[in-house]
Length: 120
Image (tube, rainbow, N blue to C red):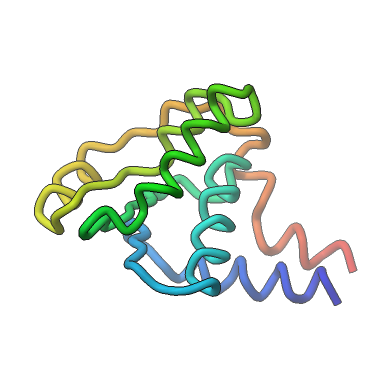
C-alpha cells in the first residue's frame, strides 16, 4: 500500500543523519533527488540537499528550478533548498553553511513515522 511504502521510505531516510548529496546519475537518482527536495519543502527533514554539479551536469535542472521561481511555481525561499557547486570541496563548504530559509508546509514533528504508521 502507499502508506506502507511511505512509512518504509521515511524510516530509510530517517537513518540518514548527514546531509543529502546527489551525484550525476539517471532517472532513478533524479526521482529520488526531487523527492528529497519535496520532503525538505514539506518539513519532513531539515537536511541539506547538495548537487555535485561536475562539468555543469545539473545546469539545466537548476535552470528549471529558477524558471519555476520566475513563473511562480516555486517560492524563492524553497529554491534555496538545493545547494550546488562544481567541486566537492566547494559543495561541502556550502552544505556546512546551509540553514533552511524556506517556510515548511508542515512542521517536522507532524511527519513522525510512528504517527503515520498508527493511522492504519
